[in-house]
Image (cartoon, rainbow, N blue to C red):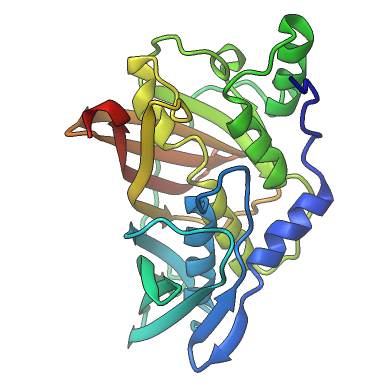
Length: 300
């Protein structure tokens, strides 16, 4: 067995992620992109979600996305290009609405409803960020993997998820390092700090798309923690059914963000997960929710 661990996230990996978000215009409100493989033969859901969000943003001026709702209809492949068709549903005085279909080989694999809102003054409050260690005091997933291999001489099954973070150019620091590997039964809660591992351009659209990209990481697996089964187990068929992201405040994806997740319920072979994303100053910058398939293969 090859015990070599993946290298830490690098600027080159970030450049590749930025590349998949650089959509090419192929017609009026039509765009195309070539996906990339991030360690699984199936298309990573966060990647296609982020690309679809970027397509919607390219048709809106001076308004930030605030509500993004995606339905995953078919699995995609990293081998073939994806086309994005944007429908301009409304441009009002304060809000704009877009519908985007992502098509691969002529089939719709994801459909997105996106709403944009101009900046306005109004009431403001938020729930407080929960206590969390500073990210610099926590080990990264790559260093945790290196320590595991050195101590045990084995490569854990969860290397898939850890190596994915390196290929995505993300620096991820779990709040519970001992929960990254293994299959112990734990509460349906999980949290990590994350950021893109180098400074990226100031374009807000890019930072919102990068947030969308990272919002799917470790999310559905939170619903499996009470059952002691990791999402990458060969006995599982995990798949996102729908994913929503609400953006509350401006943010930078290349600065530390705390992603706090919990799963209130799992039923009917599906897990439901909620997320709150805070910046380092404690501002709640985004919220998320996902309903996904967590079907044991033997029940099919």
